[in-house]
Amino acid sequence: MLNNIFQLAPQFLHKLDPEKAHDIAISGLSLLPKMSTNAWKCDSLKIQFCNMHFNHPIGLAAGFDKNAQACAGLLNLGFSFIETGTVTPIAQAGNAKPRIFRLPQNKALINRLGFNNDGMQSIKMRLKDTYTTYLPDSGIVGVNIGANKDTSNKVEDYIIGLKTLMPHAHYCTANISSPNTPGLRDLQHEKPLHNLLESLCKTRQGMPPKHQKPLFVKISPDITFQELRSMAHILCQYPIDAVIVSNTTISRPATLISSPHNNEMGGLSGKPLYTLSTQILAQFYLLTEGKIPLIGVGGIRDTHTALDKIKAGATLLQMYTGFIYEGPAIVKKIYDGLKETIKQDNKKHITDYVGIQAEHIAQGS
Image 1 (cartoon, helix red, strand yellow):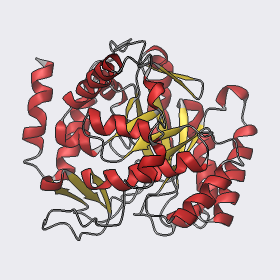
Image 2: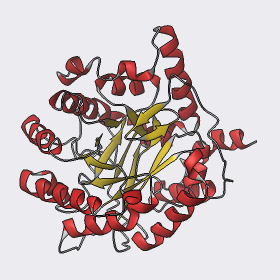
Image 3: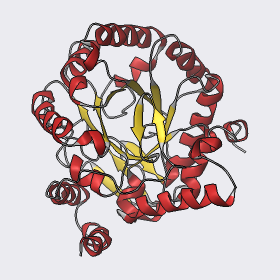
């Protein structure tokens, strides 16, 4: 019965306004019962990543469950981990509506949400309940933190986020790459990045040992190779546990099929982002010589695209737009596809593929 509902849900929801459909999906998922274990377990797909155990590499990116309302329901769909947020210190409404646009022929979305969320204190309580009552044996929940739009000190907002939310999640991601908060991407520049990373790492070090969780950074695909090289060099100087590549893009690839919404302001995600984000992923992997674990995001929609992210250098994967267009069944399809590919290729483990085509992909060929 539940599987039939999941299969029909995308057909129904895609007839509605995108944001309304999203709200309905979150409400429905928040009602799903908690489960004590994740039934999808395969030795060839299990991953130890930053001292955390993942049943398989497929996760859900930040932005879907911004307010940590549906952690249990989303893990019940089969994701091995989900990332809540982005969360800011003070609740904010985000940008004016409409602010999400479907590009169905491109299997893409454009959003300019602007970090709409309930604020750290509300989300802290939801994460605390989820983290302490049920998650240790059934999935990983991370939290993505950002800065308020009207803040006078962005770095201080990240420090507040780290102190408030890291104790109640399995890991914490500093989102410095959203295109929808003015000035946020400036934190990727050399001096601001040094300042932010030094502040975050010092803050984490000063927390009680049990609260010192893995710290990730999420970067943009809209950077030159020289900028990426500088970022890679800087990130290697700090105890950053992983980098997420990448956020949405403000570019509009020539491959976009004509749509009434192509020129809407905001970040583009989904199929058109795949090539750019995968190339940046491979370049970052090579620039860091594989020393920083990577999570690949952008345009994953089937086993082929998932495996290519891994071949480019990712150890874990995150989906968002592909999940929206293909529905919950896509998680199991990719899981089964990866398992079968390992068997056919006579490999022992999914990590045997990490970075094996990075040089080829990095060149865009």
